Amino acid sequence: MKTHAKLKKELDTVFSQFIRWSNADADGNVECYTCGTRKPVKQMQNGHFQSRRHTSTRWHLQNCKPQCVACNMYRQGEQYKFGNKLVSEYGQEVIDELIILSKSSVKYSRIELTELIKEYKAKLKELIDY
Image: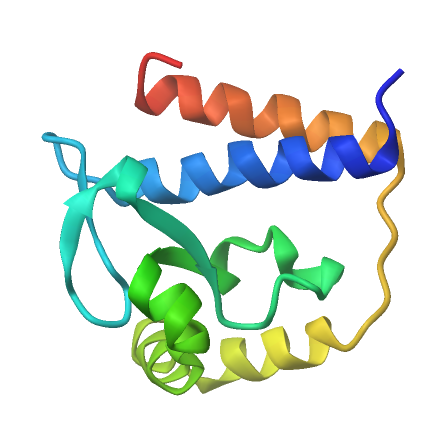
């Protein structure tokens, strides 16, 4: 039986791949949400508007977008640019909801994590040969 920590790590991996591949073009390249750099999916990361330390928004589709390593790691996620782009894409209300949601405490059970892993593996399989 996998530990809670291992399941979270596995979900992070599958969800990250899903976020990047769902935004990729037919050649497997994806654009950084904050700077516009285009690179192969494997060279990009899953960036978060609200930090991934907040479990309540860690795997939230509107909170996550592909980012290059420079923006996500070296520029601390470019949260201001990320937020402005989310506002133009979804509206201020959705961003306000993400911020509020990130402050709530959520604890996923191992069963819930396992189900999310299965769900995102299936979605990923629809996008690519996984």
